[in-house]
Amino acid sequence: MNQRAYPTAGIAAERVQSHFLERHQVEQARRTKDLATVPDSAAIEALVDCAFWASLRHEERFPPRVSLGFLSAAQARVPLTFERPLPLTPEVLTRLAPAVERPGIHLGVWRDDNEFYIWGATRTLPALCFVLEVFDPGLLVIKRRRAQETGKFVNVAVLQGDRIKVVDNHALSLSDSPLIVAALLGLDSPPSSVDFVDALIQLSVSMRAHGRGGSVLIVPHGTQAWRESIIGPTQYSVLPPYSELGSLVFQPHEESVQWSEKLRRSVDLIAGLTAVDGAMVLTDRCDVLAFGAKIGRREGYPQIENVIDAEPVEGSDARAVHPSQLGGTRHLSAAQFSQDQIDSVALVASQDGGFTVFAWSAVKNAVHAYRVEALLL
Image 1 (cartoon, one colour):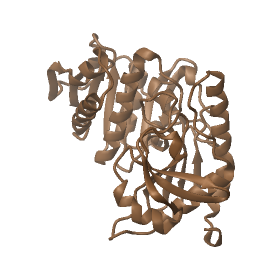
Image 2: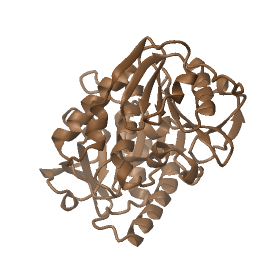
Image 3: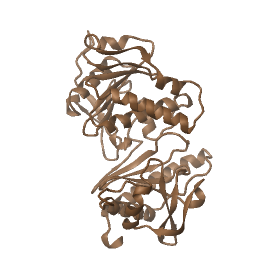
Image 4: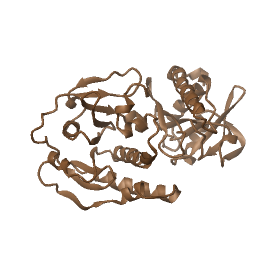
């Protein structure tokens, strides 16, 4: 691997390791148990370099999609261990990828002296475990497992070719950001909101996956004020409100494989509705009120002129822009809705994979547009 080094791997390693060291100190102060080993820069560079070259190969015409976890077999609860460890090489990763491409399965990588090897596979990872996922040729995402058992892993960095996006969770005022943005940046949600936020994150991922673009307006339950920002009667109004997702999220339940599968199916059903032209209206209790709704300017309210555009990655500065600079009609109408309905949040998925969260900022007295596609991979 050293002879054909991927230069970006070395550049990213130092920056990524500092993130893991910082988070490890935070969790140690909280006395979190069973923390993963913090990878040094050499380990990060070796895994990234190998995964990058593997991503450019093919196995029976299919590019590899694989997830690597940096942990020993002893740190996994129920490891699947090979009789003889395999060397960490692009060729080995490419051959193994078809066996572990399903979500939630990770190849375990560890080190003996200065040699890295694959010891097997696992579904369980310790808190703050370093995870590297190969998404597409040349596209890698570095993640860490949350301290809690549930929830999407926290994205740390996205590498695509020679481009590096390192997530900066200090770049935004988290106290003034929507719960979904704070959670994507790794901030723990209030216990009463954990399942709700996780459902919104899953919904966002599913919206991006269908590739047609879409909008979701999250409005307070029990009110009708949102209708003042909708043009004419909504063709696809839902009565009574569709409440399956809300019943899964807000009614007492125990975490289980069956519950998680029901949640996933409900999220995918609702995400499918966003493919219809117009916006879907969802309450903050996860009840679907309408889809295909046409957003207009609320009577008596000014036309939106600017939003604060921010991408929470290192080197990205917030700036005031006209919402049309972020996208087309969906972005402009979502920004207008967020200005007119300041107690609501709008999620917008673009056909090209972009994803923006619009929300009113009381601190800035303006609509904040959070571009979070790097956090959703």
